[in-house]
Image 1 (cartoon, rainbow, N blue to C red):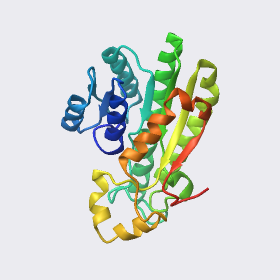
Image 2 (cartoon, helix red, strand yellow; image 1 turned 180 degrees about the vertical axis):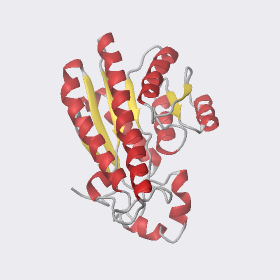
Image 3 (tube, one colour; image 1 turned 90 degrees about the vertical axis):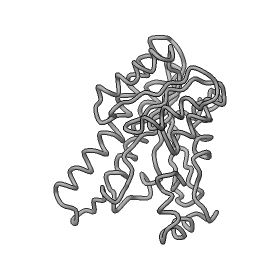
Length: 247
């Protein structure tokens, strides 16, 4: 479970642990949060593991470390990503060349190349064991809705969805399902200030439900997509945006 220290990732980790699974909680820089979460999860055998997902070799080491700690890995959830922030805004024709290039490089490395490296490593592990499994990618409605202030984000999430569909075809003969969930705006800790500020009402009004999603709602979708019952949905991208964007 990448990017599991807080937000959606933490909710997914709790959901799997409550179902009796052992969870490897990945963190990038939030070591204290990840270790506290791993210690608080119900059940035993959970572990917090750090890795820089900007480095494909570190992604592969993360999978090896998770296998060593847990004994085996049956489900990979790629949740970590570089999300839009005030510091990585990059509007075409307005951003400096340096900011434009930096945003595209960082988001491509973490949002796309890292999940590719992780999926490759986990698929190899599952195939070598002759075991079925599941890969679930956390994408975004931005892949379809467009991200004019953060085009690299929208592009990398669209590519993540497409990669998942390609892997769904190639890995199905091995009993490995690959799906994606595409959330809309989610009320995570990181978004609390935005939602309580001037933009909050506008963001909530994007959905006819008059609110934004919760991490637990995305976690429920991820858990189902990773289950054997959802195997026939391999290749699907599940929209989870409260009808804020329809395609």
